[in-house]
Amino acid sequence: MRVVRYWSVSHAGAMQRVYRALDRLFIRIDPLLRVVGYQRLEAPFAAVERVLKGWFFDCRMCGHCVLQSTGMSCPMNCPKQLRNGPCGGVRADGTCELDPGMRCVWVEAVRGAARLPGGERIEVIQVPLDHRLAGQSAWLAELRQRAAA
Amino acid sequence: MRFDDEPITPGDPLPILPGHHSAGRFERLLRAGVFAITAELSPPDSANAEDVYARARIFDGYVDGINATDGSGANCHMSSAGVCALLTRVGYAPVMQISCRDRNRIAIQGDVLGAAAMGVNNLLCLTGDGVAVGDHPAAKPVFDLDAIALLGIVRTMREQARFASGRVLTTPPQVFLGSAANPFAPPFDFQVARLAKKARAGAEFVQTQYCFDVPLLERFMRQARDEGLAERLFILVGIGPLASARAAEWMRSHVPGVHIPDAVVDRLRRARGKGAAKAEGKRICIDILERVREIPGVCGVHFMAYRQEEAVAEIIDRSRALDGRIPWYPGRDARFAPASDSPTELQQEAWA
Image (tube, rainbow over the protein chains, first blue to last red):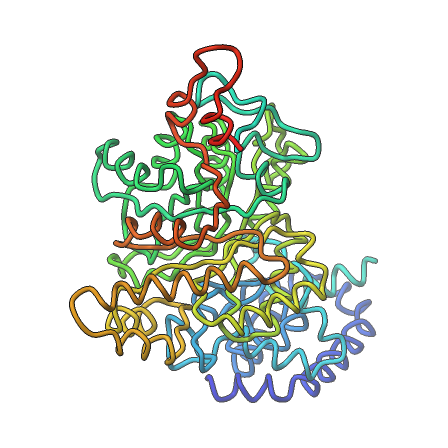
């Protein structure tokens, strides 16, 4: 829902705090997750992620979450799925060239990034999406990577 | 302006100078600090090569590069690769536009190699307009990459001689890399950050969206200079004549990303009488050209004169944007071919 999506961007700072809290929790229970097995957790994690991130961010389950670098505005909602900034077609009122009823996700991203500690991560160049990750849990992938490090 | 090492056969590449990426005239001019002019060629809806040459000839002696658009406005036309292949055959310096809308990374990288092999020296990496605005709204939008990811991939091909997959190329594509910028659309401050991203990703030149609002451009250029981008990038400002107030109205409501201030539309509306609006459109274009030329960091202009291609020469003449030089075109040097070993006065003038 767009209204919720816009709300999440307005509360990007709070969203990030929730994320960090979840992060700490997951890191703490990592040994437990390992016992259960990451492979077995994939489906339930993805299901929870789909519902929660779907509600707050209109998440499309690309499998490579960059919300923290885009001011909590999901770039997959851009009709061109641009992950590095807006296209040149943004309308003067900040809406999308292809969907006049929708605020440009990158205008939103800039707004959200201004409310985030570390919002300058919006300037990081994002690599092209790995389409094999679609539908998978981005949380689990990141957690796995972090716990391994 | 004539280079000392011009090839005998026009289609042959120039030697690549130290610090240059391509064998092209366009990069040479920009690096030499010459105010460069490029123009957009609208590709024909035909399979006839002569249609391409006829459209290119309009600009003979006036432009340093010809942009071959890639399904601009999401409308189907002859491919940019096809147009460029024809243009390089006779020695023109095309800027091949590559849009991410219609092809994935496999197809695009293949096209980059093919284009470079055909003598294309300049690539313009674009995201592309959405399919909804074009003549095939039912088509599948690809957008596997965005312009910034594409720049990074082509730079890797050129500098590391590798595909994005890591597989090795035996001969890398020696191309001068460009992208687009729109200083006239929100989020304004982020447009400069995005330009910086493009520079970091590999862009060496940019061509902007149509400029009808010089103060907005001045602000953008000031920010670009503050970020050190004016030294890192050759910035060419997009310009073009408007045919009438109605055309201006249509353009600003139908063409994504085009911003035309009311003052410009009013100026066109006030022009009465046959041909008055068209003449006023040209005058506005000349005014803008003269003003943007004065902005520090602007390295040239890029003409987008759809259906008004003939007006480009007149605008360039009247604004004296070329400072008397004659850009290369097929037959330019043959016309002044030396009868003896030393060039005549006329040749020296033409080559100056």
